Amino acid sequence: MAGKFVIASQTRLEVNDWGRLGWLSNPPNTGARQLTVIDVNLDPGKGHNFHKHPDQEEVILVVAGKVEQWVDREKRILGPGDSAFIPADVVHASFNVGTSAAKIVAILGPCVGPIGYELVDVANDAPWKTLRK
Image 1: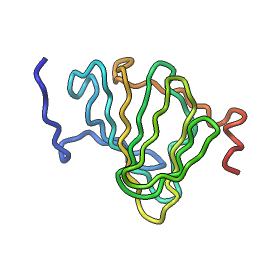
Image 2: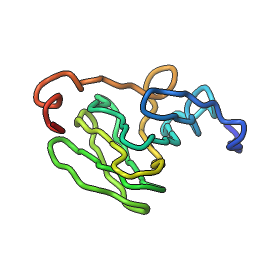
Image 3: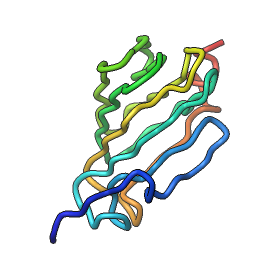
Image 4: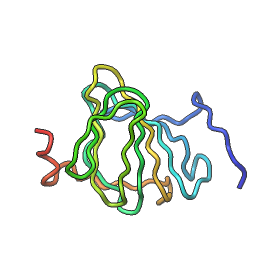
């Protein structure tokens, strides 16, 4: 497989109620088999609620802003250059606690499923639904 350049202005964007994400590398976009890379923008006061990836490890790198990052029941406020490693099947969440947009890069591996990404939402399950209250 040959490499591929990914041009920001040509990246497929997905808009969610918490922000938007761009698929930088995944099987449909680049043919990747081992890494899925996602450019994530979190709107102020919003976040990607508690979830897990049963068969994927993840690294979250904060590029801009102030992010409340959860790894299991531990929380840290991360800024630009800070990162978190999340083992497979560990619940985590990312929330923008700043006043401007926050930007993170999520790197997951290996690729799982047709888009290289699997997600199990646990935001409405105990204890996750009450951790931020």
